[in-house]
Length: 518
Image (cartoon, rainbow, N blue to C red; front, top):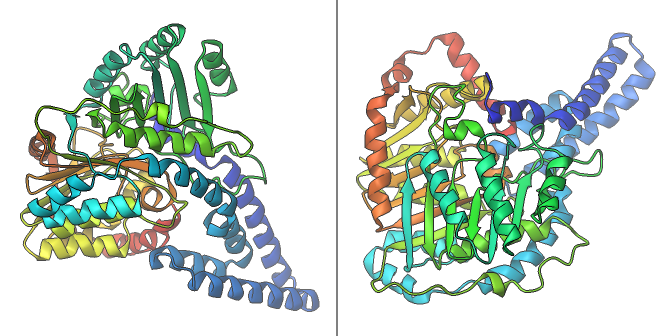
C-alpha cells in the first residue's frame, strides 16, 4: 500500500466531475479552433453571445454574499475560458443548485434542534467566569443550534488507535442503539473487529445504523457492503450518491466522524474507519490522528447531528417518527464538570461555523494559540485573524504534515506560510509522517477537536463536526500533546520568511489564486 485511503480517495473523487470537465474543455477547444480557422460570421456572433453570458454570470457571482476569496478564481476562470468556467460553476460552485437540499435540511433542523436543551444556567455561569468563552458558546448556540453542557466527562486520545480501542470496548456494552457516521469506511483489517461487535449487538436486539459518504468510500466499499450489513440486521445509508447529470449536490460531502452508543457515550475525532489511521499500514510514515470520548448529556448533540444527515438523505422517506427516544437524559454528576459544546457545520445554511469558531479562539487568545491541521488553505479573514493574534503578542503556532498525502495540496499549504510568518506566526512540519488531526488549544483553558481542517473544503463545502471544550482536564491533555509534538517537528518559520526563490514565489502565487477551487 503506497497510497493512503485519503490519497486514493482523491483520485476517485473526481470521476464524474472529470467527465463533465472533459466535455467542457472539449467545447473550449472547439471554440478556440473555430477562432483559428476564421469562421468570422458564425464565430463572431457566438463569441459575443458567450461573452455576454460570461459577463452576466460574473456580475451575478460578484453580488453573491460569499467570501471574496471564493469569487475571484471563478471570475477569472469564467472570463478567460467562458465555456469551461460557466459549466464548472453551474455544476460545483452555484449555491442555488442545492436549493432542494437546503430546504430539506431546513425542515429537518426545525424538527431536531429545538429538542436540545437550552441550558441557560450554564450560559449564565460562563458569562460570570469568562466573557470571551461565553461569547464563543453564545455564537455556537444561536448560529449553529447546539447548547453548552456542564455535565459531561471528556477523555482525549492523542492517538487514534487508542481512541478506536476505547470505542470498540464501549460498543460491546450497547443495549439500545448504535449510530455511526463516517466520511470513509474501508472494509479491511481495522473494520473486522468493529463489524464483529456490530453483528453481535444487532443479534442481541440493539438498533445499529451505519452512515458513510459515497465519494469518501468510493472504491473501498460498494453496494455489496450495504447488502452485507443489511443481512446482519444493520441499517445502512449512503450520503449523497453521485448520480450522472441529476445530482448537482455532489460538491458537498459528509466529512463528519461520529459514534453514539445508547445516547450515553459518544466519540468524535479526525479518524475514519480505515487501516492507516490505526497504524496497520503506514504508507506515509507515522499517521497522527486524535479523538475524544464524551460521556453524559452532551452526547445528545452528537445524536442530533447524526439524525440530521440520516433523515435528510431520502426525500421520499418518512424517516424517524420519534426523535425523543434517542435523546434520553443522563444522570447528573455529583459535581459540576467543565464546559463541553459539540457542534456541527453545514454548507446548507451559509454560516461558516467551523471557521468562525477557530477565528474566535484566535481573537480570545492572550498567551498562546496552537493549531494542527493536515491542510492549510485559508481565507483572507482567517489569515488576518492568525496575523492579528501574533501581532498582538500571542504565541501562534501551526503544525502541518512533514510527509504529504497529496503533493499538490501540500504545495498549496506551503504557499500560505510566507504571509503568516512575516506577521509572527510560527510554522512547524511534523517530520515523522502525516498529521491528520484537526485541533487547537489556547491559554490552558480552551481547545477544540473534530473533523474540521483549515482548508476551503472543510470550512465552506463539507458537513463537519467538532467539540469546543473549556475548563476540562482534556484541555491540559491536548496542550501536553502539542508540547510533545513540537520537538518532533521541523520549524520552517525562518525558511519561509526569507528563503523562497522568485520561481517558488510565482508558483505559490498561482496556487494561492485557485486554492478555493481545490
